Image 1 (cartoon, one colour):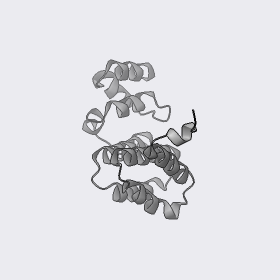
Image 2: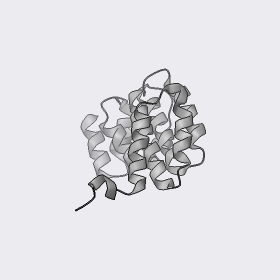
Image 3: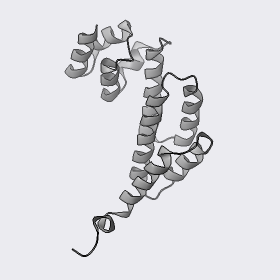
Image 4: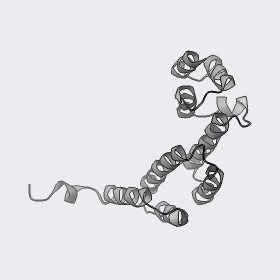
Length: 152
């Protein structure tokens, strides 16, 4: 073997790792520009994956922070019409509403993704009896119904 494993790594893997390092340490004022740069990468699937990883991490970090709505608005602008990322951001916003006992609807919860329903059913941050009862009775999967039932 003449080359290192790093040399054999596809370029998109190296770019993904570089994007993750940059996103992990980006200043708030530069976040939107960096995300837009990542989303303009030639490999759209890799770029969206990198942005989703960042979205998940940052949303979890600031879910109950008063800064979340402004951050989510910035993310929505950057994400634009990218369906998966837009849906995931909407779900994090809905999770915040449920966790903070803000308004939400049964339809929003029941039409959300399996990932989201399971997150609500299992997240200790979510204590809403209404959300847990709804998922215990009408959650899409047995796993969701069971997890919610255990918490009601």
